[in-house]
Length: 464
Ligand SMILES: Nc1nc2c(c(=O)[nH]1)N(C=O)[C@@H](CNc1ccc(C(=O)N[C@@H](CCC(=O)O)C(=O)O)cc1)CN2
Ligand SMILES: Nc1nc2c(ncn2[C@@H]2O[C@H](COP(=O)(O)OP(=O)(O)OP(=O)(O)O)[C@@H](O)[C@H]2O)c(=O)[nH]1
Ligand SMILES: [Mg+2]
Image 1 (spheres, rainbow, N blue to C red):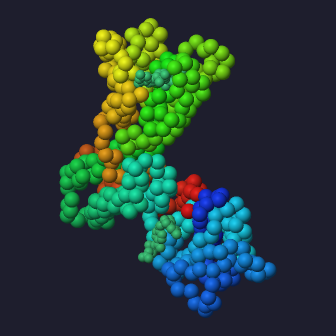
Image 2 (cartoon, rainbow, N blue to C red):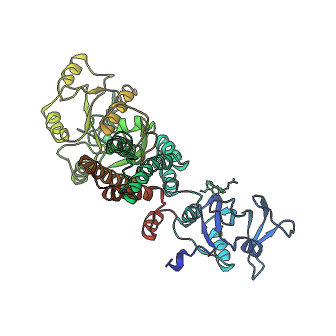
Image 3 (cartoon, rainbow, N blue to C red):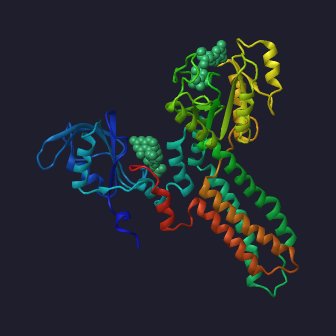
């Protein structure tokens, strides 16, 4: 039974914009009472009997009990099925502020709506067939995209890029299942509609490679979507904070000639070669001079251990020391890039010493003059992604979708093993093909459970 809080005959309402002062705040209402609510709480500037669909009306939200105006607004009514949820949708464009939006929402609730659960608008869009499940997940992906690449990927998912690939796979497996079932139903007829060899060929050359491609792009897509943590580490005064500032193009961290300037962890988001990156500047690694600094150094080591990529920075204006070597040993086991800084003032003989100092060729940079930063970005990208800067994959399944793909892959591999045997039983084959189909159907949501939907939509924002 559908729990009361998800009854789709209810009219739901939510504030759809972030709380606090802002130019405009939006209240969304969806369900059969949308128009009734409009009539009860809205007073149009010019009295009217009828509200046209998809038109903006200007007027006031008025408390129906006291007659007191609450805000000056624009409203739009979008009649079913031409709306986000395919139900009647009412949107109220109000001023945004701490009180005004909650006041209006209270009136709307009193006028016949109940508060929407997180993701409930999109859940209705899904239940009413406007989006499939993969597209619904893409809505959330758009909201959380932190780089252009991540956004592009999400938008392709929203417009059905992933769903189409899954659908094509399902069609192929369905064809195979259909002939297998003929063989189950008419065992005595010796009509071999599809030979085991042909079935084998289609599975191993057409279906499984496509699943493997999708799985690989899931891996690759993850870095584009979620981004990486890049920690800047090295001895005091080598120019870590200067590099942070240079990469951000902003004077974010304090830079001084005094070693031990940065004592706390500084984190900022940036884009590096299209990847969303959390850049983390840390205290210079050394025997700390005081308690504050020693806490800073400890935090620096914690960040180092959790980094996706460490940029190990050294000072090219000085020659390598044992201390640099010792610190490098700490970093070496982590994915890292070595950067030799201050090449604008570094003597040439130093640079050749530094060149031979590490297990990899360092990148030569000047944080001060912004030199070598592109090369550094490229190297960070390589270490994070495993190959040179490339476009993100066309589409990239998320973790849930990846798990379903893996289930489908296992089932199809079992089917292949059956086909290796002499006279494979069609009944057994059909079981595996159906299992693969059901796994793939979970991705787009042809097959779902309340539990699955709860899990997916509960992580959405309220009002989405
Ligand atoms: N004001 C407002 N802006 C918004 C949204 C919204 O809900 N309200 N959206 C919320 O995420 C996004 C836009 N997404 C939307 C997707 C579909 C439909 C829609 O009405 N689709 C109908 C009919 C389209 C038509 O007129 O042909 C449909 O597909 O059936 C509306 C918004 C971003 N901007
Ligand atoms: N010439 C030159 N000076 C630089 C460069 N990068 C940093 N510096 C100078 O080096 C000094 C230290 O720079 P910071 O960025 O504060 O160094 P840090 O590694 O963050 O130092 P701590 O926070 O103390 O660990 C400052 O005087 C910077 O101006 C560079 O590329 N060239
Ligand atoms: Mg610093």
